[in-house]
Amino acid sequence: MGRDHKNLRNNLEEIRKSVRMTQLQLSESAGVSRKSINAIENGIYVPSTVLALKIAKTLGCKVEDLFKLPSD
Image (spheres, rainbow, N blue to C red):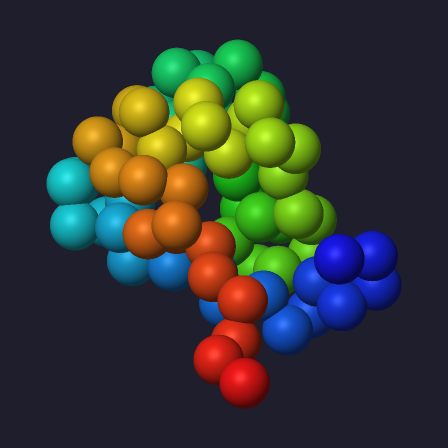
């Protein structure tokens, strides 16, 4: 995907809030800093596959629920 990450649809904040989890709680569960979660939610950072899987598992959803490519 390279530099096209700004086109990535990101639902992390919405899903995180729907399960009543703070950025800090999610970051501790995923083993990253709260700033990393904030950067992902704001589209500044695209997580690795491993991190995306950890986040999805913690939130009880699929990676595809969190991140999607735009429809053509």
